Image (tube, rainbow, N blue to C red; front, side, top):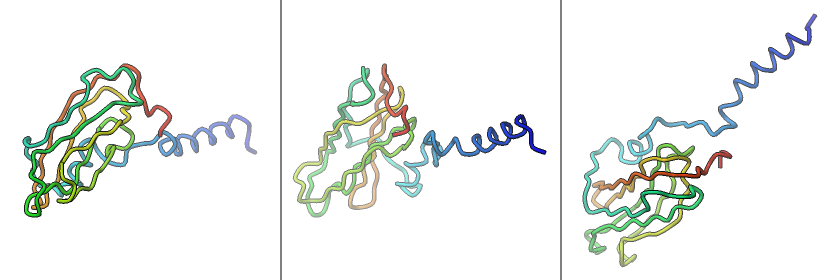
Length: 148
C-alpha cells in the first residue's frame, strides 16, 4: 500500500529529475561554444574591438558594438561575428553573417546578460582564421532569470 509519505517522496524524486530542463540547464561547459565554433582552432586577440559598458545597470538590455579591422574585399572579409556570454543560459548570444558586400565590418545590438561576466566577440574570417576581443561587464540587475 502506498502511503501519502511514499507518494510525496516519489513525486519529489520525479521533480528532481525534471528540474534541469525547466531552469535552462547548460548543455555545454563554459567556453564550450567557442571551442565548438572554432573547431579547436586558435583564436588571436587582435583586429576586433568589442565596445560595451563596464557596468550595466540592467542586464535586460546591454548595448554592444563589435567592429573588425577588415577591408571587406573579395579576398579579405569577415564571414561571421559571434557574441558569447558564458554565464547566460545559452552561451551563444548572437551571430551575424557578413560578406564582402557588407562594406563595413561593424554590428551593434542590445544583448541580455544573466550575471556579471566576461563577454567575448569571436570573429571568423573568410580564410578560416579566428580573432576575438573580450570585455568584463558588471551587471547590477540580472536578466535571463526566467530561463528565456
